[in-house]
Image (cartoon, rainbow, N blue to C red; front, side):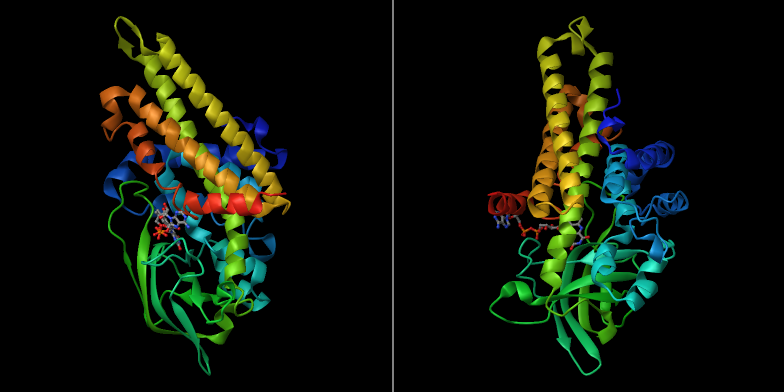
Length: 383
Ligand SMILES: Cc1cc2nc3c(=O)[nH]c(=O)nc-3n(C[C@H](O)[C@H](O)[C@H](O)COP(=O)(O)OP(=O)(O)OC[C@H]3O[C@@H](n4cnc5c(N)ncnc54)[C@H](O)[C@@H]3O)c2cc1C
């Protein structure tokens, strides 16, 4: 069974999808259990992904990348997440936040910061969430105070991918206090070796253990004025735009995870016997498999439709939220059903379904909890 069939993928994304599949089979899938157990950062696989031209290549050719499109990145995400979500997240976060600089940064910033990431000499990260809130983007409290020479950052960020490992981070911080709470935030480039930047790993997670998030404390962390991205006060809108792309890809996380859940379950029930016959011979089991497949195909069709909408900037906020919510919740549902059909073996760490079951809990939260997505779907959905 191969659920990630290419017929729904636009032609220009098929070749890279095949490359991603071969890479996932050779490097990600065989290492998944080991990295889940150890919780180590998979540097060797990240480097292999860089050598294969599959990491940080959304950055445009002008700055050293391959300029992969949203649909090409989505095709990679489906394949990588089917193989293992923890390793996949590490590979996909190596350039997290760079898109913001690519859209809004100056030429000097792009040469200085984007090129080393595109050329796989550095990795980045994006710091938005804080210990007190991740959902209320206009309620974050980290401040960037203007001085004669630049800005001084104070506050905390939480859950930041690569906070410890990255060379630099795009940081979302408060620069104003006006009544329009959406115009009070700005984006900054912060090298992780800046004095006043301290990061440590957050406590161990139950899923996606091969990816690492950190807690950052900014204590009078001083950066030059040239590290402001775009205009002061524009951060909220830059982020909203960035998330439209990100949420299509997170939908792909759900699709990849769900494909793994269904494929694993299909194989298991066709090989397992109970009451003198294959578990797959029970009609109720067949109906569950049929439902899983229907849900999967609907979510995947929706996700690809939404990808095309977002790529063309056609009602992007609405479609991104719809795709993210549907695909990630479908993944939770099929993983739950897959667990039940695996019986007792479902809870053994060595069974992939148990990892998938833990991992599916995460995309329904990150890149904006699905409740926030529903707010967006409602508010942007009245055409
Ligand atoms: C593995 C992982 C990786 C992450 N990587 C990053 C990263 O690289 N950079 C980064 O900045 N962040 C990252 N995050 C953070 C993530 O984006 C936040 O966890 C998410 O936005 C939710 O924020 P929160 O955890 O603070 O939940 P809260 O904002 O405290 O919300 C808790 C719950 O309350 C409910 N809720 C909140 N607001 C509403 C509302 N308006 N209406 C209805 N219900 C509501 C929802 O059920 C929500 O899940 C990551 C998170 C995880 C788990």
